[in-house]
Every structure is written in C-alpha cells, then in structure tokens.
Length: 562
Image (tube, helix red, strand yellow):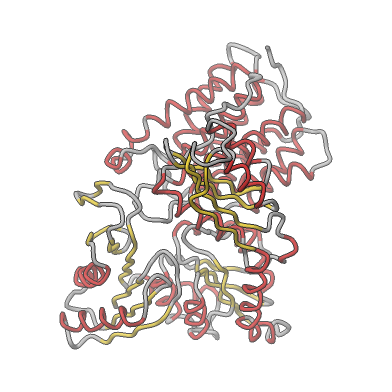
C-alpha cells in the first residue's frame, strides 16, 4: 500500500505505537548496560520520556502535523530522563523544526525531518561519539534522504530509514570497543531502533509482532519487580490516585494441580494479564511461570494462574496503604522545609539523591532542596524545572550527582526563568565535596567556579553487586560478586562485601590521602561500616575517617577519599 502523506491520524498512530514498543522492551534495553551493575536504566528513561511526549500529543487539539510534532518535542523535553531521554528529545526537536508550518508530511518532508533530527542531536552533545544513538539516527537519516530522491512513497522511505538504522545498530560494537568486549549493542541506539521500527510498522500497515514482548530470564525477575514497584510509588503521589492498587506476584507450577484448564502458551497468558493492570512482568521456563503485575483484581490474577497450574507462591501488597505510610514519613522529614517555603531565598542549592540519610547529610552542608532520584530513577527535565521554580529563590545551583542527569539538568536550566548554575558532580561524593566550596554570599558564577574546582579534589568509590557474568577491562566478573568501582571504573571484584570495600579503598589511597568518608546504604549496616573503618585504619592509622548512614539503595557503600 502506497503512502504519499502523513496526516494527524498516521502521526498519532506512529507515536502511540512507538511508546508501546518502548514500554514493552524497556527492560531488554536496560539489560544492554555495559557495566554489570543494577542501574541500567536507558530503556526506562527512553520509555518514560516518550510517554511524556505521547501525552502532550494526545492533549493537542490541532489536526496539523506541525502542531502535533511540536507537542511531541515539548513533551519529550519536559519528560526527558537521563542522557538517552534528553538525546531522544533533541532528535524530535530537530524533527519538529523541519516540519514547522506543515499540515501533513510528504516523503521528502520525512527525509528532511530526520536529517534535521540528526543535526540537532549531534549539536546537543558536547563530544559526539560514534557507535551510539547518534550514529543510528545519522545512518537512518542518510538512507531516508537517498531513498526520497527515488520515490514519493513514505512507507518505502521509512522502511529504508529503519533498516539502515538497524544495520548501524548492529555495527555499534565495531565502533565502540567496550560494546564489543561485553557483547552488546548500544542501548540508546537500540531504543531508537524500536521507535523507528514502530513508525515503519504503522506506515507499512503491519501490526506489532506478537513476539516483541521482552521475556526476562529468571535471574532478572526480582530486580525488575523491585524497579517496577519502586517507580510506581512516589512520595508525592496521592494514594487515591494510584490506578492499580495491589502489587500482585504469583509463581505457578505449570500443568500441576486440580484446576488446570489451559495448556501454557506465553502470549495467551501474557495478553489476559495485560488487560488487568500495568507494570506487568512475566517470566517462565518449562516448569514455572512467575508474574508481577499492579492490578485492582488480584483474585483474577490468582485464578488465571491456577487455570495453568498450582500456586507455588502468592504475594499481594496494598500499595495505597504503603503510600500512606510514605507520605506520613515524608511529611515529617519535610516539615522544616515547609516552614521556610514562604521565605524568599537569595540562593537555593538543589541536590539529587536517594535515601533519608543522604538527604540529612546534604541539608547539613547547606543544600536547601533535595530531588529524590539517582541510579535507576533519573528525574526528568520537568522534575528539575519544578524544583527550581518551587525553590522560592532568586538564583539556583543544581548538583545532579550522576552524569546521566547532566543533560536533563542543563535542559532545565535553559527552560527555567530563574538563573541556574549546574555543578557537574558525577557522584554523591563529588556533590558533598562541591558543597565545601559553596558560599551563600558569593555570586552564582563565583560559586559555580569554586564548586566545580572542588570536584577534582575527591576520589569516588562505589561498591555494588554484579547482576550478570561478564568480562570487562580484563576482569572476570561473576553474578552476585561485589564490585569496587573507582571514579567510574571497576577495579575490584570479590565475593566478600568487606574485602571488596577495603581493597577498593586501598586502590584509592595515595601519599596525599588524608580523609575518608564512608556512607553506608540500605543493604548493609553500621556494624559492617565500622568493621570496614577498622580495616582501613590498618592500612594507614593516620587517616581521618567519618562514617555516615545514607540509606541509599543499590550501593552498600559510597566512599570518598580526599
């Protein structure tokens, strides 16, 4: 079927299909993270960003593709999470600029739009790197440009864009050695390829493939459930606004029991559950199927499972009740901040972190506002803009404390009308050290220079658990081993939490080291932290060591050496 123009109908269908495909494949994209750490969030970030874009499109009343494209770009910008989400927003910002004033799009318009998308995306990155999402969009755009010279059929042009982007994705390991070493393609490029595939399916009249739902393996299931559950319950959410209130998990022994009515078939099993709620995860082998879903009908989920086998496990949590508890806790934590909310501040310092202990630590150093976020839950551009606007300050300093939040923070600074300085802190340790250079009486630029200068005076160490077997930088890493990461590089692999932490610190020490800060997280305890302190003092008994409770997830220990 020949397609000679894209109207509002096709455009909306393309955006809806792309959002759906990203959502279904988010966990697969996350799994492509190069580091075997439990913080791969490219798929989650791209999916949430595009959902924001889709929502803006659905609210747009105009039938003009130009207006719909502008709405998509605006929604992506405000919802952009992480570097991948920001780059995706820039791709469609460039796309939108090219379609300005056009009520519908021709094949040449589409080709030109992707060329513009490529140019804008490359300009948005300070040091563009080939073998990434940038290469994928560039190669797709080039194919579209060449094909549009030969045909006015948009379906043919879009197919060329997708196929060439897919080919470029498969070659990313040849362009980035680290991808080849680990054996994965670029995660951001994979996300974009799913978007282009969805566009291609709509324009070529193809329905979504039945096998497109990513099926996680058994070892990934618990991590994904924790992530889905964590993202679904946020401290600002009214319990009554939770659409699906019961976090329901079941484990079914396939084909066993007295109530078996169906022979197990993955797609049939999945499709029924997908109509009962959201945050659905289904994983199975020949004997067991595990389910996680947020629903209003836990009884139906359980009954459906029993029609395929007997129940080995059932767990149902009332998320509205959990949220009420979270709100009560946050209200007590934020009371002091609320008391000061009506007072106009000269300067507000906003830090991104996760954990009650880290919040208290940052506020003790002069941070005025904390955005909950970090690994696995990057705040969006809109989240940061809202925090800036709600700070009630004449000027603002933002500490992202994570390199994957840099682009979102910089976008927020551009959008906000309040003068804002971004301090490029890559870790919590750098954010804490940056605060030592903060002077409430100094100008925004003076504080920016001083706080940025402080970043280079600290070494940052993080201890976490490997989520898969891999070989990276000549280190053989096994799932569930502890890893010591120093300034972004895995240096230590060990089966013992204490040993891996002490060995990591030993790598960080040099003749100029004087002070160490140990921040222990939610997956360990103060006793273990003090044992590590004692072991470090055996390395150098003249070191000054402070121990703080951070409550941070994922990383049992955050260590700074100065």
